[in-house]
Length: 451
Image 1: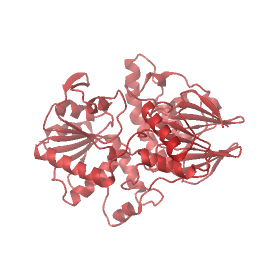
Image 2: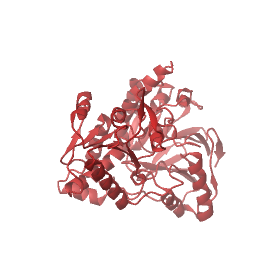
Image 3: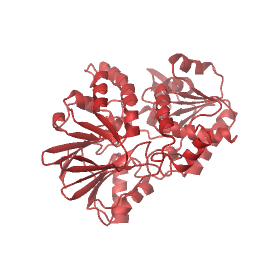
Image 4: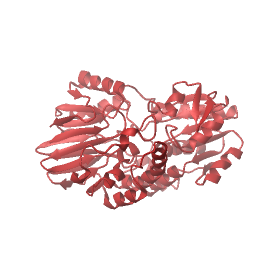
Protein backbone atom coordinates (compact mmCIF):
# COMPACT_ATOMS: atom_id res chain seq x y z
CA UNK A 1 0.00 0.00 0.00
CA UNK A 2 1.09 3.53 -0.70
CA UNK A 3 -0.14 6.41 1.47
CA UNK A 4 0.13 10.06 0.38
CA UNK A 5 -0.65 13.04 2.60
CA UNK A 6 -2.41 15.67 0.49
CA UNK A 7 -3.76 17.67 3.44
CA UNK A 8 -3.94 17.69 7.22
CA UNK A 9 -0.13 17.41 7.37
CA UNK A 10 1.70 20.17 9.26
CA UNK A 11 -1.65 21.95 9.62
CA UNK A 12 -4.94 21.35 11.42
CA UNK A 13 -7.19 21.63 8.38
CA UNK A 14 -7.55 20.19 4.87
CA UNK A 15 -7.65 16.51 5.87
CA UNK A 16 -7.03 14.50 2.67
CA UNK A 17 -5.21 11.16 2.46
CA UNK A 18 -4.83 8.95 -0.61
CA UNK A 19 -4.36 5.20 -0.16
CA UNK A 20 -3.37 3.02 -3.13
CA UNK A 21 -3.19 -0.74 -3.57
CA UNK A 22 -2.58 -2.04 -7.08
CA UNK A 23 -4.77 0.06 -9.35
CA UNK A 24 -7.38 0.91 -6.67
CA UNK A 25 -7.31 4.34 -5.03
CA UNK A 26 -9.39 5.49 -2.08
CA UNK A 27 -9.42 8.76 -0.19
CA UNK A 28 -9.91 9.33 3.50
CA UNK A 29 -11.57 12.77 3.81
CA UNK A 30 -11.45 15.64 1.33
CA UNK A 31 -11.44 18.74 3.49
CA UNK A 32 -11.14 22.48 3.04
CA UNK A 33 -7.93 24.29 4.05
CA UNK A 34 -8.85 27.03 6.53
CA UNK A 35 -6.88 29.62 8.50
CA UNK A 36 -6.51 33.36 8.00
CA UNK A 37 -9.54 33.18 5.69
CA UNK A 38 -12.47 30.76 5.59
CA UNK A 39 -11.23 29.38 2.28
CA UNK A 40 -7.45 29.47 1.84
CA UNK A 41 -5.92 30.12 -1.59
CA UNK A 42 -4.62 26.54 -1.75
CA UNK A 43 -8.22 25.32 -2.16
CA UNK A 44 -8.37 26.98 -5.59
CA UNK A 45 -5.52 24.85 -6.93
CA UNK A 46 -6.30 21.64 -8.86
CA UNK A 47 -6.06 18.37 -6.93
CA UNK A 48 -2.59 16.82 -7.00
CA UNK A 49 -4.14 13.49 -8.10
CA UNK A 50 -6.71 12.65 -10.77
CA UNK A 51 -10.18 12.71 -9.12
CA UNK A 52 -11.50 10.43 -11.89
CA UNK A 53 -9.14 7.66 -10.72
CA UNK A 54 -10.53 7.58 -7.15
CA UNK A 55 -12.95 4.70 -6.48
CA UNK A 56 -14.31 5.87 -3.13
CA UNK A 57 -13.99 8.49 -0.40
CA UNK A 58 -14.44 7.53 3.24
CA UNK A 59 -15.44 10.46 5.45
CA UNK A 60 -14.48 10.55 9.13
CA UNK A 61 -17.04 13.25 10.00
CA UNK A 62 -18.89 16.21 8.55
CA UNK A 63 -16.76 19.19 9.61
CA UNK A 64 -15.85 21.34 6.60
CA UNK A 65 -12.11 20.80 7.03
CA UNK A 66 -12.88 17.11 6.36
CA UNK A 67 -15.60 17.33 3.65
CA UNK A 68 -15.37 20.86 2.19
CA UNK A 69 -13.72 19.94 -1.13
CA UNK A 70 -15.93 16.93 -1.98
CA UNK A 71 -18.16 18.95 -4.37
CA UNK A 72 -14.97 20.30 -5.98
CA UNK A 73 -13.77 16.69 -6.33
CA UNK A 74 -17.02 15.90 -8.17
CA UNK A 75 -16.66 18.99 -10.35
CA UNK A 76 -13.17 17.73 -11.27
CA UNK A 77 -14.49 14.36 -12.46
CA UNK A 78 -14.91 12.10 -9.40
CA UNK A 79 -17.86 9.69 -9.79
CA UNK A 80 -17.08 7.07 -7.14
CA UNK A 81 -18.77 6.29 -3.83
CA UNK A 82 -18.79 8.55 -0.75
CA UNK A 83 -19.22 6.61 2.49
CA UNK A 84 -19.64 7.74 6.10
CA UNK A 85 -21.82 7.11 9.13
CA UNK A 86 -25.52 7.92 8.72
CA UNK A 87 -25.47 11.10 10.89
CA UNK A 88 -22.42 12.42 9.00
CA UNK A 89 -24.33 12.06 5.74
CA UNK A 90 -27.33 13.88 7.25
CA UNK A 91 -25.12 16.73 8.43
CA UNK A 92 -23.07 17.06 5.26
CA UNK A 93 -25.59 18.57 2.87
CA UNK A 94 -26.59 21.43 5.23
CA UNK A 95 -22.94 22.17 6.06
CA UNK A 96 -21.82 22.18 2.41
CA UNK A 97 -24.71 24.41 1.31
CA UNK A 98 -23.99 26.82 4.17
CA UNK A 99 -20.33 26.94 3.16
CA UNK A 100 -20.97 27.41 -0.57
CA UNK A 101 -22.19 31.01 -0.34
CA UNK A 102 -19.26 32.01 1.92
CA UNK A 103 -16.76 30.54 -0.54
CA UNK A 104 -18.54 32.14 -3.51
CA UNK A 105 -18.12 35.54 -1.82
CA UNK A 106 -14.44 34.86 -1.08
CA UNK A 107 -13.85 33.73 -4.68
CA UNK A 108 -15.45 36.96 -5.95
CA UNK A 109 -13.19 39.07 -3.70
CA UNK A 110 -10.16 37.27 -5.15
CA UNK A 111 -11.53 37.54 -8.71
CA UNK A 112 -11.53 33.74 -9.02
CA UNK A 113 -14.12 31.21 -10.11
CA UNK A 114 -15.94 29.47 -7.19
CA UNK A 115 -14.43 26.06 -6.50
CA UNK A 116 -17.90 24.50 -6.86
CA UNK A 117 -21.60 25.31 -7.26
CA UNK A 118 -24.76 24.14 -5.51
CA UNK A 119 -25.33 21.58 -8.28
CA UNK A 120 -22.04 19.86 -7.38
CA UNK A 121 -23.27 19.46 -3.79
CA UNK A 122 -26.51 17.86 -5.03
CA UNK A 123 -24.54 15.47 -7.24
CA UNK A 124 -22.14 14.49 -4.43
CA UNK A 125 -25.09 13.75 -2.14
CA UNK A 126 -26.40 11.30 -4.76
CA UNK A 127 -23.12 9.36 -4.41
CA UNK A 128 -23.15 9.46 -0.59
CA UNK A 129 -24.00 6.36 1.47
CA UNK A 130 -24.56 6.21 5.23
CA UNK A 131 -23.49 3.00 6.99
CA UNK A 132 -23.48 1.84 10.65
CA UNK A 133 -20.30 1.44 12.68
CA UNK A 134 -18.58 -1.96 12.14
CA UNK A 135 -20.31 -2.62 8.80
CA UNK A 136 -17.46 -3.79 6.55
CA UNK A 137 -17.20 -2.43 3.00
CA UNK A 138 -15.02 -3.98 0.27
CA UNK A 139 -13.49 -1.72 -2.37
CA UNK A 140 -11.13 -3.69 -4.62
CA UNK A 141 -8.40 -5.10 -2.34
CA UNK A 142 -9.45 -2.85 0.58
CA UNK A 143 -11.75 -3.80 3.46
CA UNK A 144 -12.92 -0.74 5.40
CA UNK A 145 -14.65 -0.49 8.78
CA UNK A 146 -15.79 2.55 10.79
CA UNK A 147 -15.23 2.86 14.56
CA UNK A 148 -16.82 5.51 16.78
CA UNK A 149 -14.34 8.39 17.23
CA UNK A 150 -16.50 10.09 19.90
CA UNK A 151 -15.76 13.55 18.44
CA UNK A 152 -19.14 14.68 17.09
CA UNK A 153 -22.34 12.72 16.46
CA UNK A 154 -21.49 10.06 13.86
CA UNK A 155 -17.75 10.76 13.79
CA UNK A 156 -15.58 7.81 12.84
CA UNK A 157 -12.07 6.46 12.81
CA UNK A 158 -11.51 4.57 9.55
CA UNK A 159 -9.73 1.20 9.66
CA UNK A 160 -8.46 -0.07 6.29
CA UNK A 161 -7.16 -3.60 5.69
CA UNK A 162 -5.28 -4.66 2.55
CA UNK A 163 -2.20 -6.69 1.59
CA UNK A 164 -2.18 -8.32 5.04
CA UNK A 165 -1.82 -4.95 6.81
CA UNK A 166 -4.15 -2.65 8.76
CA UNK A 167 -4.02 1.12 9.02
CA UNK A 168 -6.29 3.38 11.06
CA UNK A 169 -7.09 7.02 10.34
CA UNK A 170 -8.16 8.57 13.63
CA UNK A 171 -10.22 11.40 12.15
CA UNK A 172 -10.83 13.85 14.98
CA UNK A 173 -10.94 12.08 18.34
CA UNK A 174 -13.43 13.04 21.04
CA UNK A 175 -12.98 14.79 24.36
CA UNK A 176 -14.13 11.96 26.63
CA UNK A 177 -16.58 11.88 28.27
CA UNK A 178 -18.93 13.84 26.02
CA UNK A 179 -22.11 15.04 27.73
CA UNK A 180 -24.37 12.96 25.49
CA UNK A 181 -22.74 10.98 22.64
CA UNK A 182 -21.03 7.63 23.07
CA UNK A 183 -17.30 7.62 23.90
CA UNK A 184 -14.36 6.96 21.60
CA UNK A 185 -13.77 3.31 20.65
CA UNK A 186 -10.22 2.03 21.03
CA UNK A 187 -8.44 -0.07 18.42
CA UNK A 188 -5.46 -2.31 19.05
CA UNK A 189 -4.22 -4.57 16.23
CA UNK A 190 -3.11 -2.16 13.51
CA UNK A 191 0.23 -1.85 11.73
CA UNK A 192 0.04 1.90 11.11
CA UNK A 193 -1.96 4.78 12.57
CA UNK A 194 -2.63 8.41 11.71
CA UNK A 195 -3.51 10.45 14.79
CA UNK A 196 -4.81 14.01 14.96
CA UNK A 197 -2.84 16.42 17.18
CA UNK A 198 -5.01 19.55 17.42
CA UNK A 199 -4.57 19.61 21.21
CA UNK A 200 -1.46 17.44 21.31
CA UNK A 201 0.36 19.91 23.57
CA UNK A 202 -2.29 20.64 26.23
CA UNK A 203 -4.68 19.30 28.84
CA UNK A 204 -8.35 20.30 29.11
CA UNK A 205 -10.27 21.18 32.25
CA UNK A 206 -12.39 18.26 33.44
CA UNK A 207 -16.10 17.98 32.68
CA UNK A 208 -17.30 19.22 36.07
CA UNK A 209 -14.99 22.24 36.22
CA UNK A 210 -15.94 23.40 32.73
CA UNK A 211 -19.62 23.52 33.71
CA UNK A 212 -18.77 25.43 36.90
CA UNK A 213 -16.67 27.93 34.90
CA UNK A 214 -19.60 28.41 32.48
CA UNK A 215 -22.01 28.88 35.40
CA UNK A 216 -19.77 31.44 37.15
CA UNK A 217 -19.08 33.35 33.94
CA UNK A 218 -22.79 33.71 33.10
CA UNK A 219 -23.62 34.75 36.67
CA UNK A 220 -20.89 37.43 36.71
CA UNK A 221 -21.87 38.85 33.31
CA UNK A 222 -25.57 38.86 34.17
CA UNK A 223 -24.80 40.65 37.44
CA UNK A 224 -22.98 43.40 35.52
CA UNK A 225 -25.90 43.49 33.01
CA UNK A 226 -23.69 42.56 30.07
CA UNK A 227 -23.93 40.16 27.15
CA UNK A 228 -22.28 36.74 26.97
CA UNK A 229 -21.19 36.12 23.36
CA UNK A 230 -20.26 32.54 22.50
CA UNK A 231 -18.85 31.94 18.99
CA UNK A 232 -19.73 28.28 18.52
CA UNK A 233 -19.36 25.74 15.77
CA UNK A 234 -22.80 24.76 14.49
CA UNK A 235 -21.95 21.04 14.69
CA UNK A 236 -21.53 19.57 18.21
CA UNK A 237 -20.33 22.65 20.10
CA UNK A 238 -23.70 24.39 19.92
CA UNK A 239 -25.48 21.17 20.91
CA UNK A 240 -23.06 20.62 23.82
CA UNK A 241 -23.73 24.16 25.03
CA UNK A 242 -27.50 23.55 24.78
CA UNK A 243 -27.19 20.31 26.74
CA UNK A 244 -25.16 21.99 29.51
CA UNK A 245 -27.37 25.10 29.63
CA UNK A 246 -30.46 22.87 29.77
CA UNK A 247 -29.14 21.34 33.00
CA UNK A 248 -28.02 24.69 34.49
CA UNK A 249 -31.39 26.34 33.73
CA UNK A 250 -33.57 23.43 34.86
CA UNK A 251 -31.68 23.17 38.18
CA UNK A 252 -31.78 26.92 38.78
CA UNK A 253 -27.98 27.25 38.71
CA UNK A 254 -27.96 30.34 36.46
CA UNK A 255 -30.28 33.38 36.42
CA UNK A 256 -33.22 33.26 34.01
CA UNK A 257 -32.13 35.41 31.05
CA UNK A 258 -32.87 35.12 27.33
CA UNK A 259 -30.55 32.64 25.62
CA UNK A 260 -30.38 32.92 21.81
CA UNK A 261 -29.18 30.38 19.27
CA UNK A 262 -28.52 32.77 16.40
CA UNK A 263 -27.47 30.31 13.73
CA UNK A 264 -29.81 28.85 11.09
CA UNK A 265 -27.26 26.12 10.41
CA UNK A 266 -26.99 25.13 14.10
CA UNK A 267 -30.79 24.98 14.32
CA UNK A 268 -30.93 22.64 11.28
CA UNK A 269 -28.15 20.44 12.66
CA UNK A 270 -29.81 20.27 16.08
CA UNK A 271 -32.82 18.68 14.33
CA UNK A 272 -30.46 15.88 13.17
CA UNK A 273 -29.35 15.38 16.78
CA UNK A 274 -33.00 15.11 17.80
CA UNK A 275 -33.52 12.49 15.04
CA UNK A 276 -30.82 10.19 16.51
CA UNK A 277 -31.32 11.06 20.23
CA UNK A 278 -32.98 7.69 21.00
CA UNK A 279 -30.46 5.59 19.04
CA UNK A 280 -28.07 3.68 21.37
CA UNK A 281 -25.49 3.35 18.58
CA UNK A 282 -24.82 7.09 18.86
CA UNK A 283 -26.17 8.50 22.15
CA UNK A 284 -25.06 7.69 25.70
CA UNK A 285 -27.33 5.70 28.03
CA UNK A 286 -27.72 8.80 30.24
CA UNK A 287 -28.89 11.00 27.35
CA UNK A 288 -31.33 8.35 26.11
CA UNK A 289 -32.72 7.97 29.65
CA UNK A 290 -33.37 11.74 29.77
CA UNK A 291 -35.22 11.73 26.45
CA UNK A 292 -37.32 8.76 27.59
CA UNK A 293 -38.39 10.84 30.60
CA UNK A 294 -39.68 13.45 28.18
CA UNK A 295 -36.82 15.94 28.66
CA UNK A 296 -35.92 17.56 25.34
CA UNK A 297 -32.17 17.68 25.92
CA UNK A 298 -31.69 20.55 23.44
CA UNK A 299 -34.54 22.80 24.63
CA UNK A 300 -35.44 24.62 27.86
CA UNK A 301 -37.35 27.70 29.14
CA UNK A 302 -35.83 30.99 27.93
CA UNK A 303 -34.21 29.49 24.83
CA UNK A 304 -34.97 31.31 21.59
CA UNK A 305 -33.89 30.08 18.16
CA UNK A 306 -33.58 32.80 15.53
CA UNK A 307 -33.78 31.40 12.00
CA UNK A 308 -34.52 34.54 9.98
CA UNK A 309 -32.39 37.68 9.56
CA UNK A 310 -35.27 39.71 11.03
CA UNK A 311 -35.35 37.52 14.17
CA UNK A 312 -31.57 37.88 14.46
CA UNK A 313 -31.78 41.68 14.28
CA UNK A 314 -34.49 41.67 16.97
CA UNK A 315 -31.91 40.31 19.45
CA UNK A 316 -30.50 43.85 19.53
CA UNK A 317 -33.84 45.11 20.88
CA UNK A 318 -33.80 42.69 23.82
CA UNK A 319 -32.22 44.50 26.78
CA UNK A 320 -29.14 43.04 28.45
CA UNK A 321 -28.32 40.76 30.18
CA UNK A 322 -28.57 37.98 27.61
CA UNK A 323 -26.58 35.07 26.19
CA UNK A 324 -25.95 34.79 22.43
CA UNK A 325 -24.57 31.61 20.85
CA UNK A 326 -23.83 32.12 17.16
CA UNK A 327 -21.61 30.89 14.34
CA UNK A 328 -18.99 30.82 13.18
CA UNK A 329 -16.83 29.16 15.83
CA UNK A 330 -13.64 31.09 14.91
CA UNK A 331 -15.47 34.38 14.14
CA UNK A 332 -14.52 34.01 10.48
CA UNK A 333 -18.03 34.74 9.25
CA UNK A 334 -21.63 34.25 10.29
CA UNK A 335 -23.89 36.17 12.65
CA UNK A 336 -21.49 36.21 15.62
CA UNK A 337 -19.56 39.00 13.87
CA UNK A 338 -22.53 41.37 14.08
CA UNK A 339 -22.76 40.77 17.84
CA UNK A 340 -19.00 41.19 18.22
CA UNK A 341 -19.15 44.47 16.32
CA UNK A 342 -21.80 45.64 18.77
CA UNK A 343 -20.53 44.29 22.12
CA UNK A 344 -16.73 43.70 21.98
CA UNK A 345 -16.18 47.28 23.15
CA UNK A 346 -18.56 46.88 26.14
CA UNK A 347 -16.57 46.29 29.37
CA UNK A 348 -19.67 44.76 31.01
CA UNK A 349 -19.86 41.99 28.38
CA UNK A 350 -17.88 38.77 27.89
CA UNK A 351 -16.79 36.82 24.85
CA UNK A 352 -16.37 33.13 25.64
CA UNK A 353 -14.43 30.82 23.32
CA UNK A 354 -15.41 27.17 23.64
CA UNK A 355 -13.60 25.77 20.61
CA UNK A 356 -10.31 25.75 18.77
CA UNK A 357 -9.19 29.10 17.31
CA UNK A 358 -6.86 28.65 14.33
CA UNK A 359 -3.82 30.89 13.92
CA UNK A 360 -4.79 34.00 11.95
CA UNK A 361 -8.54 33.76 12.65
CA UNK A 362 -10.40 36.71 14.21
CA UNK A 363 -11.20 34.53 17.21
CA UNK A 364 -7.51 33.79 17.73
CA UNK A 365 -6.64 37.50 17.51
CA UNK A 366 -9.18 38.32 20.24
CA UNK A 367 -8.08 35.36 22.36
CA UNK A 368 -4.41 36.38 22.03
CA UNK A 369 -5.24 39.82 23.48
CA UNK A 370 -5.61 42.13 20.48
CA UNK A 371 -6.87 45.54 21.67
CA UNK A 372 -8.37 46.51 18.29
CA UNK A 373 -9.71 44.05 15.72
CA UNK A 374 -11.22 44.40 12.26
CA UNK A 375 -14.86 43.24 12.26
CA UNK A 376 -17.04 43.56 9.13
CA UNK A 377 -14.74 46.22 7.70
CA UNK A 378 -14.68 48.30 10.89
CA UNK A 379 -12.03 48.71 13.62
CA UNK A 380 -13.53 47.62 16.95
CA UNK A 381 -11.87 48.11 20.35
CA UNK A 382 -11.88 45.03 22.59
CA UNK A 383 -12.90 46.15 26.09
CA UNK A 384 -15.07 43.17 27.04
CA UNK A 385 -13.78 40.26 29.13
CA UNK A 386 -12.17 37.53 27.02
CA UNK A 387 -12.45 33.97 28.35
CA UNK A 388 -11.85 30.47 27.00
CA UNK A 389 -12.89 27.07 28.28
CA UNK A 390 -10.74 24.40 26.65
CA UNK A 391 -12.80 21.64 28.25
CA UNK A 392 -15.61 22.32 25.80
CA UNK A 393 -13.45 21.30 22.89
CA UNK A 394 -14.79 18.29 21.01
CA UNK A 395 -11.14 17.30 20.46
CA UNK A 396 -9.19 14.94 22.69
CA UNK A 397 -6.38 16.53 24.69
CA UNK A 398 -2.86 15.10 25.05
CA UNK A 399 -3.61 12.43 27.70
CA UNK A 400 -6.65 11.24 25.72
CA UNK A 401 -4.63 11.07 22.49
CA UNK A 402 -1.99 8.97 24.28
CA UNK A 403 -4.77 6.75 25.66
CA UNK A 404 -5.95 6.13 22.06
CA UNK A 405 -2.46 5.01 20.95
CA UNK A 406 -1.73 2.90 24.05
CA UNK A 407 -3.75 -0.26 23.09
CA UNK A 408 -1.89 -0.50 19.77
CA UNK A 409 1.66 -0.04 21.13
CA UNK A 410 2.50 -3.78 20.88
CA UNK A 411 1.40 -3.93 17.24
CA UNK A 412 1.89 -0.59 15.52
CA UNK A 413 5.04 -0.05 13.44
CA UNK A 414 4.66 3.73 13.14
CA UNK A 415 2.26 6.51 14.11
CA UNK A 416 1.90 9.47 11.74
CA UNK A 417 1.04 12.64 13.67
CA UNK A 418 -1.29 14.82 11.58
CA UNK A 419 -3.99 17.52 11.80
CA UNK A 420 -2.16 19.81 14.19
CA UNK A 421 -0.07 22.95 14.14
CA UNK A 422 3.66 22.25 14.07
CA UNK A 423 4.23 22.82 17.78
CA UNK A 424 1.38 20.61 19.01
CA UNK A 425 2.29 17.86 16.51
CA UNK A 426 5.94 17.91 17.65
CA UNK A 427 5.00 17.77 21.33
CA UNK A 428 2.60 14.85 20.80
CA UNK A 429 5.04 12.94 18.58
CA UNK A 430 7.76 13.23 21.22
CA UNK A 431 5.35 12.20 24.00
CA UNK A 432 4.25 9.08 22.07
CA UNK A 433 7.89 8.11 21.50
CA UNK A 434 8.94 8.74 25.12
CA UNK A 435 5.98 7.23 26.99
CA UNK A 436 4.86 4.43 24.66
CA UNK A 437 8.13 3.61 22.82
CA UNK A 438 6.37 3.85 19.46
CA UNK A 439 7.99 5.29 16.32
CA UNK A 440 6.40 8.53 15.10
CA UNK A 441 6.61 10.69 12.01
CA UNK A 442 5.22 14.15 11.22
CA UNK A 443 4.51 14.06 7.48
CA UNK A 444 4.51 17.06 5.15
CA UNK A 445 1.92 17.89 2.51
CA UNK A 446 2.57 15.87 -0.64
CA UNK A 447 4.85 13.31 1.04
CA UNK A 448 4.29 9.58 0.45
CA UNK A 449 5.15 6.39 2.28
CA UNK A 450 5.02 2.75 1.20
CA UNK A 451 3.48 0.70 4.02
